[in-house]
Length: 454
Image (cartoon, rainbow, N blue to C red):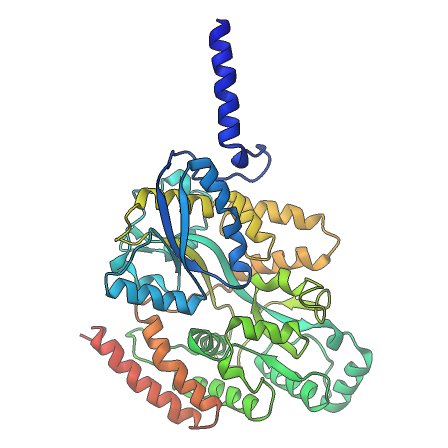
């Protein structure tokens, strides 16, 4: 009996030493995906990088130590570059990785090259994830991605502008309106112009101005104004009166210096940096930048001095609603993966409660109910009121305003047609109607070639 007890003791010590990095108290957020021996297995991953995205990957050493696997990140690129890599690799049979970055806005174009995940993830594995996001990731009954974190854009504004009584008095004198956080696109236009024309801010508004980022920002203002990219038959409708009004506004903002002169060169990092520097008065921005903006070392101009609000209403039209372009970053397993089972274990780890909680602390919005509960409880104890306000606002937007782009495989090909024409409009090379008509003609051909009108 004593020998058995000693054996159990030794075995327990070995287990603790072997999995020590992964052992956490039961009241702490838990890891997942550590229950298989993957000794000698190398898991290759192509994923998104830049900004706050890379913090998660520091925890991969926990997975390696606990399972014996080796994880090799073979590509670490921004969202648009990793999308290009995946498309090229899928088309040329060059996939040499087991886990790939994915996104609810992109997944429809990859499905022919991905493994359905239904056999790798049980109902229990998926029980804590947002049903709405899992629904968006399920096509023809097949689950193709596991979400990492979600995002929707909140309205960000500089408190130093809105809380200054002298600026408020000057604004009321100039416009006859009180200076309040804007709730409509017309109010944003008026306030942004006031801030720039009176020297209170270098730029009145900020936005990413190329690639899918620009397409999405136009789409957001379009549907907030009651418009749509396509009708029910997938005929393009973005060149109607509403679409032209949105495009004309963007062109006027560029011509009048309301948005930065390099807007058409900006993606998310550059756009966020302009706000971080205090050069932009207001903008829509993803919640994922929250901790960065609140860091007094990286963003001293705005840390502790910005506010958040619900997305604004578009132009006054039938169907007007708040902005709410949204989606979720995720992971998938390519059909060509050499180690799909091991890849699934890594995805379980990367999307576990523990890592989801760690990412939520950076400002990313959770996709798991257990993580939401923890971050809300944490925020209640914070001495920074905005910490809790942002979570309450995020839940409101996700519940009421969350709107994905059209879930079609042609979303990115469409964007690649659309955004250069919108850039030409912004730069004044063509009129809004001319540019949108040209984009609509090309888009119709794209959709016809894809079989939408047969």
